[in-house]
Length: 91
Image 1 (cartoon, rainbow, N blue to C red):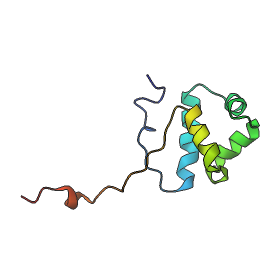
Image 2 (image 1 turned 90 degrees about the vertical axis):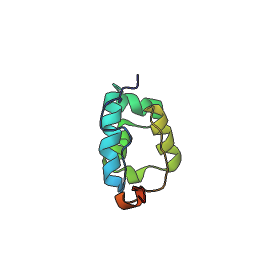
Image 3 (image 1 turned 180 degrees about the vertical axis):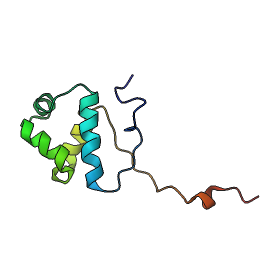
């Protein structure tokens, strides 16, 4: 079972970068990793992991995808949900 199962991190919509940092931090902690342990796996310093969690805008796409992989997460792109009225059957 994934360490984040049943937690609010599952299927979260991220609309602004500031939402991503706390999610990454929570995922790291749920995986039982310290910043230093995650840094070693990423090949960066502990302070760099701290910076990533504080300001996810500092992440490049390659590093972001590697970070997700190490935290056993994935990114899913999909169309935004339709308004409730658009989902109602016409009858």
